[in-house]
Length: 109
Image (tube, rainbow, N blue to C red):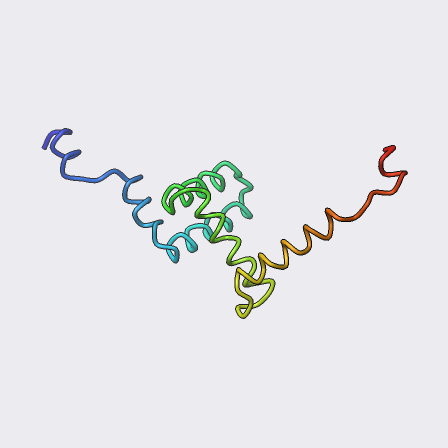
């Protein structure tokens, strides 16, 4: 069999990997293994490549960041607090911070 026939009948490893990593559970396992390998050998380039592959497979970085934020908020605040409630707290805190008048010594610095 020649090379062209083989390439037509097979898929690239990267395409296969990205399809596999589009599943969140598979992506989680992949990153866990990558992190374990990083802890053993300190190869940051491979860890970053793994993270890049997951981002590419999962969609845009924005989607991934939103999911990461949801997971982080659930971990920190528990599953009972909904995102809208968190946003209200953040908005309230931001408004409070913006209403504080700086002291004269802070303006001079």
